[in-house]
Amino acid sequence: MKPEVKLYRDLKKNIPSISYNRLENRSLSGTPDILAYHNNGTFFTIELKVTLGNKIRFSPHQISFHVKHPKNTFILVACTPDRGLVRLYPGHQILELVHSGLKLEPLCAGWDACRLKLESL
Image 1 (tube, rainbow, N blue to C red):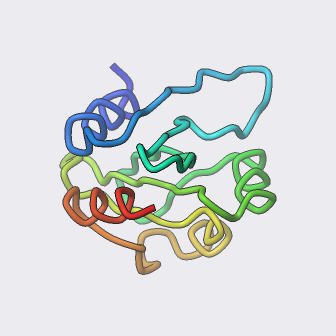
Image 2: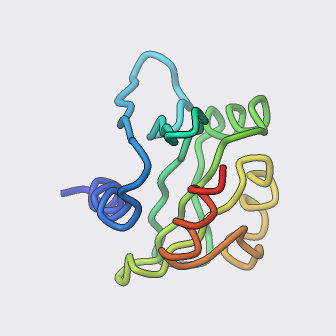
Image 3: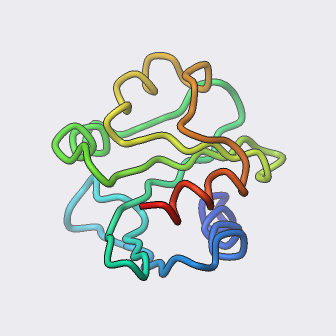
């Protein structure tokens, strides 16, 4: 099983209050992995990334998507082997994230903090 599939399962388990739709889109490169919906009527996207080190790899299409869509887009990064250590970044910080990697201060870190942030949208 791919690491991002495991991260998706962890996301659903740790933040069950949000409705998630996994996007398997091969026709539109750069589209985030998840379209999410909060019961208050807010839609947002989440790009899932798993990394072994400080650097996070993004395709040029993923970078372009987040630059063009800076609001209500997020990047959830898990550090393996412990996927429990997750960090949430706003999509508008993707260029900083590309250059700084995990040295960039996240919007929030840990499942509980990420849950509270996404539930507050």
